Length: 122
Image (spheres, rainbow, N blue to C red):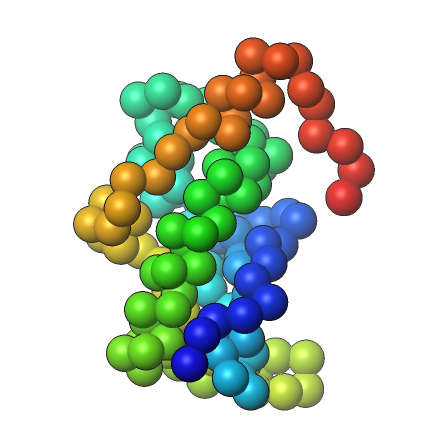
């Protein structure tokens, strides 16, 4: 089964984790990446990230993040969570997951900063 309808939340959650969602068959799956883990990953080149920067980094690595979600779905590594009157599957993408998988890129953020682009309203 393939993960479909992958999306990244516009803003972080209350706990400052960024949330991604997708559908695994008929199951809605949510995955969270803690802000601190994303910051640790890109600390060398980007010591001071904003939430907009973090979202840009996630967008630029959407295929890798979706692959992490796919792999965890296939392994059944989720917890049921009641959310908005329905039960969804929640996956945690940890620092270890980020550092052990394919190398994430900051190319999209570099391009955005070098070109002087500012993120528009979402």
